[in-house]
Length: 437
View (cartoon, one colour):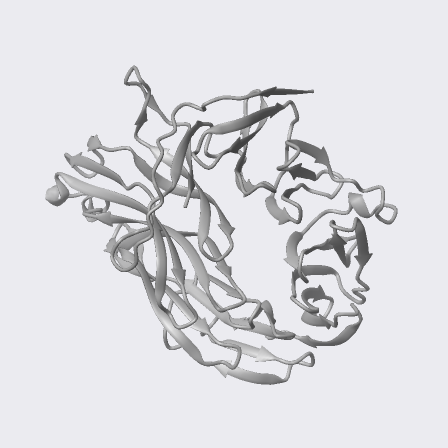
């Protein structure tokens, strides 16, 4: 059962788009408040007309809301469906979204144009394929989707082309499970076998072209122009090999000590990101966000520093484009947070500032565009090692929930809002804000 209605959704302040380079952030075209649990399902995407669409889980069902160019709700649909066990959301062709469940039979497809959520259609799959437990899902080879895992102690992988409603099972022999799948023209898989972890390469014809055993510290991180790209978890070096495991080049990483994420782009370049910030009972270490880009030949293109000197840094989105552009979203805290951790009166009062950033960095390491979400500032008083109370705060974005890339220039973002109060002055904790940049 579904119900259709149009609504304003609490409050929608409108901003004019402003694109400034250098020290100034690009301002949002508009922002819209939504009263919903930030920890529940929340995803953003576009419809066929380029309108923003927000998918969210409420107590009365799943809401699909479409916004016009001024940030006003054009249409909102409430679908009385129960979504359980959703592990990730994967963008599909034709303005659709795959909500991945424990199996394909337990997964759902969201249509942003029709405002529909339907169970994934397993009728066209081979018998029993829809009931196999899913270990992971990744976009590969254009607009196709790879689904993989282990079934009856045998590795399996299925390539789905939802635009044509076809699928093809990969022949992943002599394996116990498929751990990861990457690929642009062909595919590279990390698998577990009785003798250890291996990498298997498949050509564009989906026939196996080679396999080799991984070292104990090696991790497959992607496909660099048809070659497996490996990350060494011990020394943080990067290595690209051929289908037999023969090293083509090695990047000795003397740039970044702490690596929190890595990916390989469609142009074959590799990016690493992370920071040395930490926060514990011994104190606080601040750091910037570090982003390294290694080109397809193994040369360092740049070492980019993002944001301010921060702590408690989290990364919510990193996307690479054909031209080498990287869009990275992250959040962190600044301020006198050491007073909170050390348990002394030295930080009385002390202030914590929470910021959410979205940066665009060219292949040469230049920041061409960036967005800063509304900042959250919290001031505390401390009366001892365990007594901490908030004195004042403002409304602001305290966590990034979702980012949707619109080409290589624009974004839809979804953030948790802290400090929001209702018209009668009561604090509201279940608030998110959708922004169009």
